[in-house]
Image (cartoon, rainbow, N blue to C red; front, side, top):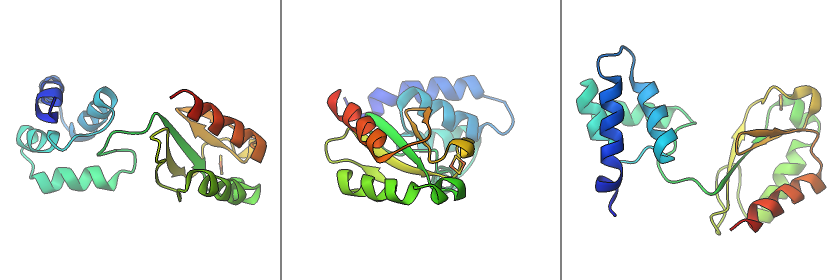
Length: 158
Ligand code: FES
C-alpha cells in the first residue's frame, strides 16, 4: 500500500490531537515517529498546513534533530557511545569492530536490514564505560566478545 494511504490517516489523527496546542511541532514529530517508526515524507505537507509553517521549515526541524528518521529503521538500533569516558575505555576499538562486521561507519543500516548504527554522545553510564544502547536498553562494561554476542543475537532473529 502506498505511504499516502498507509500513513496519512495516522498523521491526520495525530495532528487533530495536537490541534491548538502551542509549540506542537516537536511533540507531533515524536508521536508520528513512535506510531509509524519514522517521519514519512507524506507527513510534511500535512504538518506544514496544520501548523501554518512552510514545508521547508518542517523539513529543517526534522533534519536538525538527529532523533528523527525519514526512512524505516532496521530491526535493531544500536547506538554506540562516542563521548569522552567511553572513548578513553575502548569505544574506538568497538567502533572499528562494528565497521568490520557491518561494513558501516557511525551511521547507516546493515545490508541485511538487521541493524541500524548511530552514534550517541553519553548515555549516563560513564562509570561503566564503554557503553552502548541497543533498542533502548543500555549495555555497559562492553568487551569485544560481548559486542559480538549482541550482534549475533540481532542477526539471528530475522
Ligand atoms: S561517555 Fe559514554 S556513557 Fe558517558
